[in-house]
Length: 251
Image 1 (cartoon, one colour):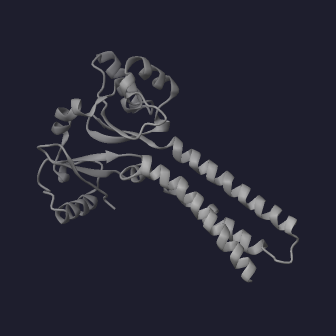
Image 2 (cartoon, helix red, strand yellow; image 1 turned 135 degrees about the vertical axis):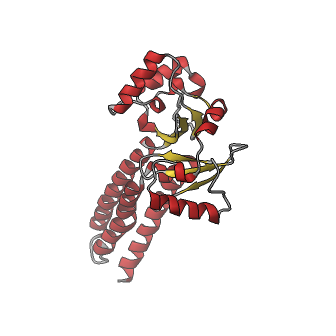
Image 3 (cartoon, helix red, strand yellow; image 1 turned 180 degrees about the vertical axis):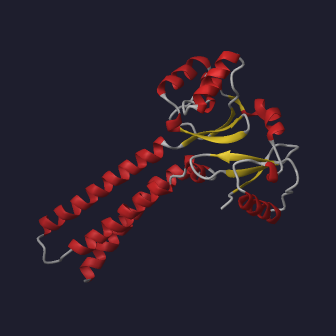
C-alpha cells in the first residue's frame, strides 16, 4: 500500500504543478477579476481539475502494483499521463480562445469582449483602419469605448445584425476608440442601482446591501451593468472621477 500511496502522491504533485502553472498564467494574465467571472469558464476549469487532479492520480493509485513488471507499470502510467496531457491541452486551448481581450463601454453597458468574439475578417479590417487598438495574441485586457459608427446606414446595419444574433459593434475593433474618449458618454449612462436594468428586484436588493457594506451610496447615479457570458456584475463608479470603485455580484 505504501508503494501505491507514494505513486499517487507523486502523480498528484506533478499534476497539481502543471495545472497551477497553466491556470495561474492565464489567471494572472487575462482572467483576473472580473475576467474569470464574466467569461463563465468554471465548467472548463472543473473538468480540468477533475481529470488532472482527481482521475489521473486515482488511476495511478489503482494500477500502481509493486509486483507488476516495471515496463508494464511505466506503460500504464504513461497512458494515464498522455490522457491527462490531452485534457490539459484541450482545456488550455478553450481558455486561451475565450480569454478577455477588451472591456468595452458600448451604448448603455460595459461588456467583456473575448478572443472568440472577434473573427479574422474583423481583425484584418482593424489592422488597416484602427491599428493601435487591434488585438494581438499577447495583448492583456484593454479598456476601450465601442461606439456605433457615425454613418447612419452603417449604424442601422450593425443594429439590425445584432438584433438578429449577428456581430455587434463590440466584435468590430475597427470602431474601437480609447477609453477616455467615451467617458462623457459613459457618465450619461450611470444610474442609481434601482434603475439599472439586467437585474431582478431581489438581486438589486442584494446589490444595495453590498454597496452599503462597502460604503458606496445607493441613491447616486453611479452604476452600470457589466455583462459577459454569465450573470452580469454591477460596476460602481465615482461619478466625478469615473474611477471604478467596485464590481459587485448579484448572487
